[in-house]
Amino acid sequence: MKAAIINQFGSPDVFEIKDIEKPIIKPDQLLIKVKTVGLNPVDWKQRKGNHKLILGSPFPIVLGYDICGEVVETGDEINKFKKGDIVFGAIDNKYGGALTEFALGHENCFSLKPDNITVEEAAAFPMVSLTSLQAFRDIVNLEAGQTVLLNGASGGVGHIAIQVAKIMGAKVIAVASSKSKEFVEQFKPDSFVDYKEKNILELDKKVDVFFDIAGNYDFLKTKHLLNPQGIYLNPNYINTIIKMPLYKLHQIFSKGKKAKTFIMKHNNFDLDLIAQWISENKLKVNIDKTFPLEQISVAHEYAQKGHNKGKNVVVISN
Ligand SMILES: NC(=O)c1ccc[n+]([C@@H]2O[C@H](COP(=O)([O-])OP(=O)(O)OC[C@H]3O[C@@H](n4cnc5c(N)ncnc54)[C@H](OP(=O)(O)O)[C@@H]3O)[C@@H](O)[C@H]2O)c1
Image: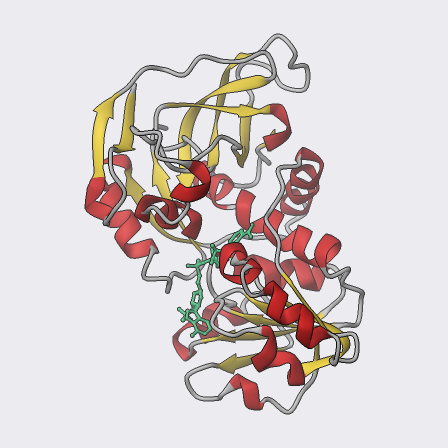
């Protein structure tokens, strides 16, 4: 089967389109004929080799987590899905394995694709919507009426996080550059701040959650913006976890204010909830660009600039 593989870590040019063996399904997995693959920063970070100390270097590596495709085979233990189902989800293999014609994932990674979205949109949703939902519900226990600042509101996580925070009844301050203002405002944040015009560290408002999606601040710089018990949340796990001992020390003198980080968990119940919100037209995803598999290097080059409005998607088959 055709796949975009890497045989070394490095620049977007390391991709090669090659024929590789079709993967062999386990009893608790689905084999998916991949239609579309959503790109996330984790893909280009892994391509650069940022996670090689944790995940190793099992070349040839097929990258990519977020997929939409057709179930073509089910393992013996699977009863939730059947052949022919069109599913979407973030697959749970080391390094993913989505940028190819057939990919494997455990049942708990998938939900049925809602009828009211395209296969491109379906592949764009999983990681960013699971991240937003779990961040607000599980990590910061967001309550209706609380105020969330989203730094990086126009990107993949950001534009979904605005909508999830609003669904949960929070007030949203969206931070992005002025060129993204119109795009961001369609998701109805309560206010918009252009980070190039206004230093957000000088904001005259306090927030309950500072969600540093772009990751260019830290707990020490932002804690004066937090209400008592407020939380600085950074989804950039590795960069944040190494600062945690320092943050914990500062938390002692910070009126209950805390710093947190987390990694999204694969959970089909959460994805089912997201699918329900999509079906009810409560959650929309924006596709910035689509690319054929052959243009994977161009796609990664564009995605890693980090100024997309919403998501980028690679189309594998119809
Ligand atoms: N922990 C997890 O499980 C998890 C899951 C998903 C993502 N993440 C992490 O979350 C981060 C964001 O992911 P993403 O998918 O949203 O990335 P993305 O789609 O590349 O979006 C990045 C956004 O950051 C904004 N930005 C860039 N520089 C900025 C600045 N100086 N100030 C404010 N905003 C700025 C950009 O907006 P402008 O174009 O307007 O500048 C862009 O919209 C990545 O580090 C990713 O690895 C973690």
